[in-house]
Length: 360
Image (cartoon, rainbow, N blue to C red; front, side, top):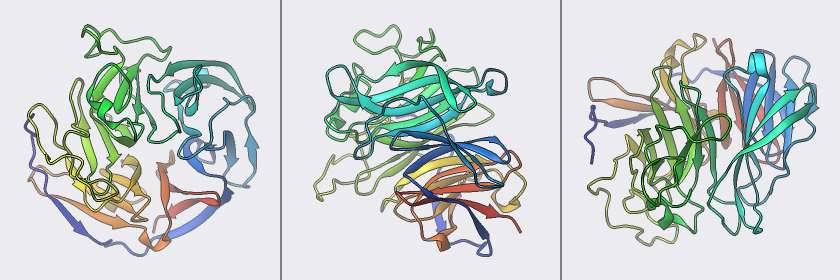
């Protein structure tokens, strides 16, 4: 087990800043899952039934994008993440993750690139199909992030019923994938020359990863759902095994023991874990100036605790977590910062809202 460079001790507190104001910018969203800012006043967002839309945040007008991929909208599956290419300003390329049936009729995770041309997608290309077939689309992961070298990370969840496969390298269950933008395999991936290992695997031993970000300095942070307890936040490094389900701080939903172990040699410890579960659903590292008290902190949305966790790490070995925005009393699905630094929140479900957090 690799030693951490800091001792992580998690302290909990309620919000010290209870005077936030909120503005509902959009309402009536149909299972909205993720969003990206095209400009300060315009976003592109996904709805899980398979709809990709652009919304004007000034007048509330919405344009539905044509020619989107056919998705399997069932259980936890559908159209998931939308991410802009780092060179979107010049190439108009976006990336979409989604669940769909493979050639054998099984459900799995896909990643597509496409050119956004006004109100339609062109030059669509499936650049990744997970070797993780399952009966129904659950525990997909589906989060996308770009490394600073331009390669893509994709979270591929454990499929719920296939959790033991998260510990083997011949499949994509419970893995973080790294590919080039055209779907090819980077030559420096950690398992390229490992027998019986899929060469696009970057890390393994994950459950259902719902937060994935890369900092400006290149560090990769991920969080994932535990079962009953044991939600984790991890610092991701290539080739490492993050333990699921051989080690866990959670128990099964029935109350049964999944593993008697919380530590094993050769398996990584989380930076910290949430027990009981908060069901973390998304994450940003906030670097804007609109909310000085939030600057340089991780902001994690949560479905069960219905708040945002502000997480900070310090060099002193004492780190803390604070609950924010709990007065909304909503399952929070996604969080993003606008180009000018305003925080926006997507609420979960068939009548979702986009909420702007107003600074003082």
